[in-house]
Amino acid sequence: MITTKAASTTVKLAEIMRPVPVVLDHHTCRQTLRTMFEHPESKCLVLCNTAEKPVGLLMSEKFYLVATGRLGTDTFYREPAMKLAHKHPLIVDIACEPHTVLAMALDRNPIHRNDSIIVTDCGKLAGVLYVSDLLAFRS
Image (cartoon, rainbow, N blue to C red; front, side, top):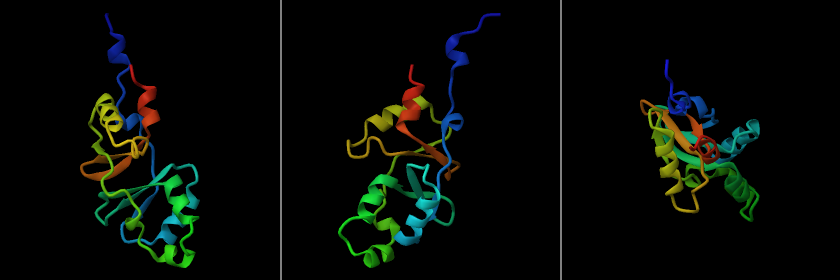
């Protein structure tokens, strides 16, 4: 029996994606910050509508910088989280090939190049990928 190394090392997005905390798109920054504190291991948070469709991405570090900035905390807490979210993040289907997703991720604007990648399954949130996850499996 002959096997090829390429066939045995094929990685699917479902195998490397990570779970991600979710906040509904109408939640406030206070609610979002609370969710982030409940999931300190996560680099990001995905905003979804009530149909579980991703509509925005908040990277934790960027969000914390705004949260601890000069704005009054009362004003910040009442703001909708969607106002601070990246409204056009990279969203890919779970069936996409990892090398294709990596190419799309590296082709983004440098400001967003290391942002998490949202993975969907039939349009609903399935999880996220970090660019480092994809780079680890690059041939």
